[in-house]
Image (cartoon, rainbow, N blue to C red; front, side):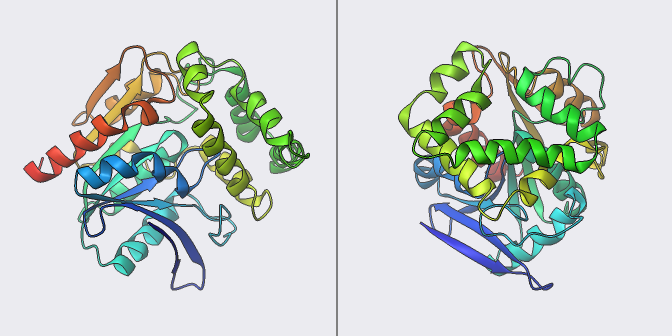
Length: 296
């Protein structure tokens, strides 16, 4: 449909990718890492059929969203509330993928009076939980370890190296994507090899460094540090979807999240990995719409 630059009271703007049925049930999407609000395109067709409208939110420094120094997941609810006000939504639901989980959790906890439900797909848990890091494939484990234990300049160096590879001529994006995808289980490798998925991943990477590396470096560090708002504070209806074959964010994360949110429904999907959102977006949105309409 369209891209919006939503003005905030502090002078920043938030880039919102708007897809689906205009005026439909509003769902705000919080992307993974690296990622951007444009990812909501994967649910566009299903959202239209289900009378839902998706709003992909790019975090500070990502895409065209203004960078904000020292921004954390605790600041997400304030930004999200202003975006919802801008579009005229008193109440809405949340959909988060992978590294978008801390922002979704903070928003569900601090905006519980406005959030109808939250759905986490392949959602991260705090890396301080036992076994989370050790079960990740190497690329993610390396970045999370560095971000959690080293000065920010080390994470920035690692990101700049990937940025340089990404921008290295026509072959740069392919080389960069291949490095990021190395070690994926077969199901994820198969899905990620599709031409349309390669193009989406290229767009994610370009948006992640469109303004430089500050935004994604901050994103990575925020994910690696202890979460500022615990999942134990969430009271809104919650679904946790996770692929049993996920090696990017291990299924153990879903177990930890469900322990912190005992009211949540956990859905472990056999034969699926970290590309679960792409493969099952129709089922995920259908389940959300059903529960929203039932008021669950």
